[in-house]
Amino acid sequence: MYGLLFDASRCVGCEACLDACRAEFELPGTHGKKLSTTDYTVLEELDESYLRRMCMHCIEPSCASACPVGALHKTPEGPVVYEYEKCIGCRYCIVACPFGIPRYEWDSTTPRVQKCQLCSHRLVEGRPTACAEACEFDATVFGDRTELLAEAWKRIAEDPDTYAPRVYGAEEAGGTSVLIIGPPEIMNAFDVNIPRESLPQKTWVVLSQIPTAVGAAGAGMLAVNWIIRRRIALAKQRTESNGEGGAES
Image (cartoon, rainbow, N blue to C red; front, top):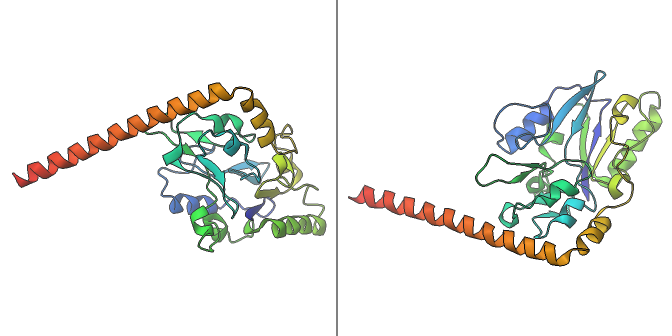
């Protein structure tokens, strides 16, 4: 399973990772300060250090376990990916995520859930993530999660005066594919309420108490979603047919 290691002590805030992500996914606008539907990753400046915020790609993602239609799932390579074609817009994933990552396109007529996909399309081709490839300072490193975890502890052991003795993501929410190390001011910025254990089992316990309601709601939203997309497709076909007819006449 692949992942990323972000080393805040080596990040210089050059934003090459942000530029690479924006170019890879053709995201509009400029870099924001907070995660959004067009900012899959951002840099926060904390006491002259930088922290990358992005999807943590949990080993056992609660967002996927909360999704009634399987629009989110963990791939064998490591990314937690989102499939718009399956999404019914219930937004359970947003509520379930312990890190508060997914963003929803509230202003769109065909809204999607947006977040980092860990460049899943590149990973299946044997390529690293765009952000890691763009980093010249080894602040963002791509590789096998087990090896990244070993590298993280190696850096901490070799320079204990710089690093806090902690690897964020090693255990949080049962472990994540994104690991973070850095000085104390960075490591102290994380939510201390994130549990160590995996969350999907807890998510299922809650959902299983209301199977009828969840099933009915999911089926109803899926039906409405299909009708809306069908109407959009038919309207598009009519427009194209009228355009072709006008062109012929």
